[in-house]
Image 1 (cartoon, rainbow, N blue to C red):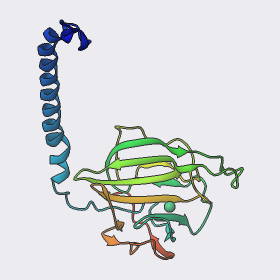
Image 2: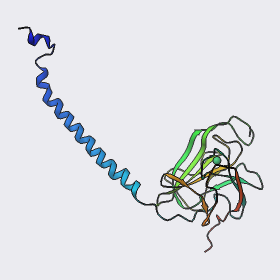
Image 3: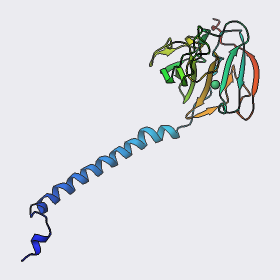
Image 4: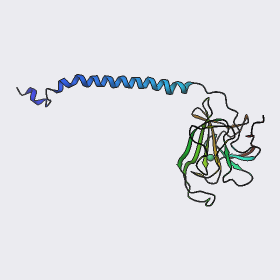
Amino acid sequence: MLGPVTTGRPARARTHRRPRSRILLVLLALVAVAAVLGVALVVVPMLRPAGPRPLFQMPVACDETWQLSTYPGHDDYDVDFFPIEGEAWGRPVLASYAGTVTVAGINGSLGGRTPENPEGPRGRGGGYWVKIDHGGKWETQYLHLLEPPLVAVGQKVAQGEQIGKLGSTGNSGAPHLHYEQRRGWEKVETYFDGEPSGITTDDREQILRRVSNNCPAVS
Ligand SMILES: [Zn+2]
């Protein structure tokens, strides 16, 4: 009669088995519901095609000429904006197109590069930055701003509205605006005023000039 004793298991354990499996079933059902919801809310929108490309404008003042550039190791399609005239620090950064602000904050760390101390410690990532959702799965990003963005998350912005000031926060060598256009989750070649920028790769350095047509609408 030693048999039952050697199991080391109280006889009561048997009565617990059923409720435990019921809990498991409920958990499995919850996981299944979550999976279905996940597919419905995440995957389905992912598969929806993007809308037509908005008529993006350069993120800088009307009629000004700026240098657009990239360098090896930047990332394909990324564009750095430098003014060719005047002070770079504090220059207005404008929305490329109307939309809703989805990010207005700090990416990485700010570092300590300011107009008073341009060679201060480098930060990490994008520093002060803004992301705008233009609808149709299109978005633009603006990095290394000098000060906290002039817009807030959820705010609607018009094309040409100032969203920040040009700076050198985050991982930035000199005051400039790092700029991206995205369709869905992928970066794409930047277009301005309907014309492609030509900056599609970071295999080599590229420097070009363009005039901003981010001008107030004429009524
Ligand atoms: Zn950049």
